[in-house]
Image 1 (tube, rainbow, N blue to C red):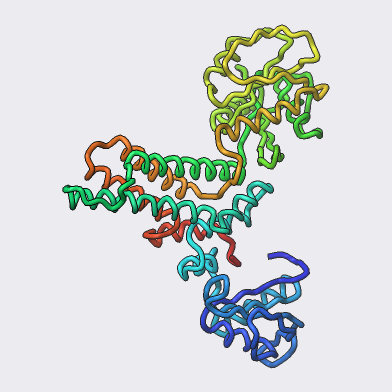
Image 2: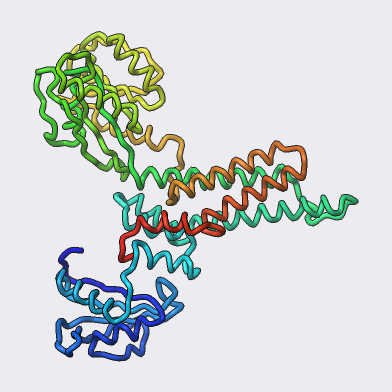
Length: 428
């Protein structure tokens, strides 16, 4: 809660109007959706604030219940007092995400759309915001519903063939392999769009690692376009992890400058080296920086091999004569952190590695649990493609459908709902 122009106190439930009017001078809100000017009063009828109030009538409200919103001035005290008086008159304090949970349980939105709401609230880039807006608008729901219908049609054809083996068919043009392949392709595209959406929503963690004095801190400053890390010619200057977040083509990227990796007897520096190694292993990507004006060391070659798949080799000091001979399949970029050359190409390389083969068109939003359910469904469909026994295929299709329905919140338990909606703020 903070100070602002307006503070909104929201009440949802069948008694929303009767409770709210106990603390307002206006006692009726005849036209739903219209803002009425009224006053906030205490139990003695004393005016505390001039406010606006609006009623949303069930089922045409966010939660599907009657809702009253009281718009007070944005002071912390007056908004808190309004809330306290509502509770004193019979309301209960909302739990985190309770309004959106009621919208879900009331059938106003499905679970994927609820995830879209949270995504909009927590978006850190335009692409993440667009992905969440598409999801809230039913982007995930529509695709899953279409795939679910296709699977049902396949199951119907299979069941008829099982029950009537003499040739009676549900669809004369039915081709099991073709239909299953279509479902797999559709689900693969959905998974790619959701995984890309998650990347743009959560961002990527990029560790800057390498030996002392190869220019890691200078590289961080060059990427940021400002002096953030201390740069000296003394080896071991950076001993702690320095992190900053930037946007690269709307992708949130958290860059972490780490201590130079080397053997040292200095206890503090040794701890920094340990943290650097952990950061390089735990990060999504690692910018492995080497000094292009010197021969590459055996330790650096070993690090390239250890970080295979997520290492981007940054050959620094391209303003000096090139000495390092780097033969590796890892992607590499030549830069001069001192002069700023190659930084644009480095940023693009980071972006390309982060998004990899994911589609960048029509991003969608999903949480980890929903992604796992989509993957489980896809796994079942792929197994159905290669299964020879029709009964096995039918069982796998059933498993695929159940996994898809969990994405939308069908057949999910209270434990999953508690876990999901607890991530919301109280007011949503």
